[in-house]
Length: 572
Image (cartoon, rainbow, N blue to C red):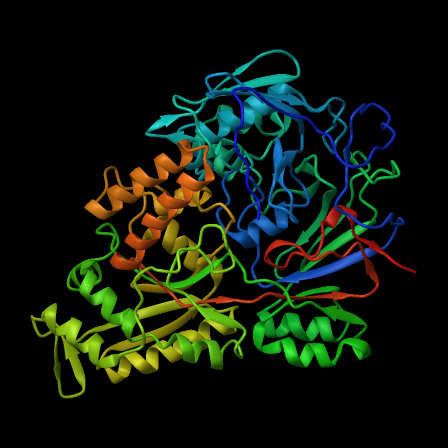
């Protein structure tokens, strides 16, 4: 499990690793890739696939994992998370210190790093990146991570290589939050930000020529063809090396193909068109049998930390009575939770390779998962009793509210995800037994994200959210002011007392350095969420990544991750 805490008033995190390598020309202290077990060889093209396309090429404003996956090979942050241990490690910053009062963190930038266009990375780029996050009108969810008790992070330049970041109160999770800050080039985006937040939001759109998108990551975007693929080429200026001192990455090219759905992605993997596949639980046994013939290995990975759930719209800006009144009634939400047969989802959708979920923290997070939250076992009689308490009555085969309105709503989900559609059909069928009509409407992922983030015009959505070992990093989702607070985002003040309590918990969690005390706060938060049921969780599925045996440096890590792109290589 990853953890970190302060054991003294002064902490120094150096870029030390259990290996050493010769300095690169111009980079006296390159980061050594100590996670990879093998020294690779250069050349080759790795082909991957995903079912959602990017919505922007601007790393400051994206909110979805599809866009994040496309941008990840191009950009870096000051610090990063080790995919094996979960520990926070140096990245573009080679080291950091924290002041005696634990409020100011000073980062030292790695010397000699260049942008992919050859310009030097400087402390002004870091200052600019923070300025972009906090500029009015810029649609950045990172702002939520770096705002504490309503007070934004402050920063100042110390010298040409150091920047000091200061919070009003000590923040025990500060490094976790800092890992979400992507460093962007001032010389490329400065003019757009100077024109204001709206202009910046449109900078580096999908129409931007790839040559204009400049980063410090292992790859450079070479081409983007909507509906088909993104192609990258190796960044010869990348600032990492292997344990022998060879500059990374090993691969010459990297390609991400866009596929219609997960079924299409699976077929591409089986036909050897792609090299990696995040297999679904129900595919595990079949894929295991085909390992030798397909020249791949499928791993029995741990549970994902991500959550998949049904959420009802409680936002008055997007929904009107009577649905708004239904969804805001906790008895209605609890009733619907009782009408979800999670055991059937485990059996029919995930072939037994999942665990029913009652908490926003996965059972895979052994440190922070609360096993004693309120549960809602499948019980249609109990569901109907709760609905009667809330004024609903069944008339014949139709459930109606107190005013006689039939209870029906649209339940959208991602068209590219057949598992979520299968879950939706199971939920729809069981709700029909209560006299509730749920209309399942698969939509493109980008369309759903637009509804969640901008229009707010939706009834209910089945969707997922990427998880983390440290739940406090999800503050932009759980705090009432957060941009990703699905059911009622960006509240000026909490709409309910229980949301106010969660806000307080997440502020206290952020300040807390002791993992034990954080654990107690997380347990209370999970209990509130289970009692109030703003989102109804389905399961915690297992991971079963499949990797072509021709790829080197495969090593199973957290959430089924099997390696870092910059250290992948082709065996011959």
